[in-house]
Image (tube, rainbow, N blue to C red; front, side, top):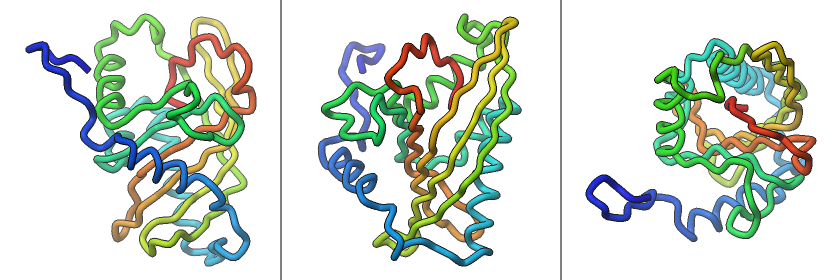
Length: 195
C-alpha cells in the first residue's frame, strides 16, 4: 500500500509465516475427537455469533470491528474449502487495516454500492465448536443465510462460517472469519455487504 508520502507500507502481520499458519489452522480442524460438547461453552460461542450478526444487521460496524483481534483476517475464498490465499484468488481477504478502511468508506455515505444502504437479516444455525492445540483458541463452524434487500432487490447469501476465536475471559475475539459461500464459483456481481 502506498502512503501519502509515497513510501510503501505493508500490513505488519500478514507475511508468509502468517499465511502458512492460516492454511494450517484451517486444514483438518473438524475432528470428532476435538468437538467441544460442553453445552454452556457452546452456548457462549452461539451468543457471540448472534452478537456479531446483530451488529452487522444493525449496521453497527464500529461495534462489529471491536469483536476482532488487532491481528485479524476476514476471508471469503473463491473455492469450496478455502485452500491457500497465496495461490488462489479470494473474493475478499481483508486484514485489520482493510476492514478499518471499508468501515470508514461505508460511514461516509458516499459508497455508491451502499446507496441506499442494504437492509439485512442473518440466520445462523448448526453451530459446532472444536478445540485446538491452544487452550484459549477454538474453531467454530456454522451455517448461515443472509437476506439482503437494497434498491428494490432481494439477494440471498448462503454458506458456512468458520470462526477462529480466542477466549479472552468473559468474551471472545475473532482472529479469523472465513466465509464459504455455496455459490463461490458463480457470478456474485458486487458483494457490497460484509457477509
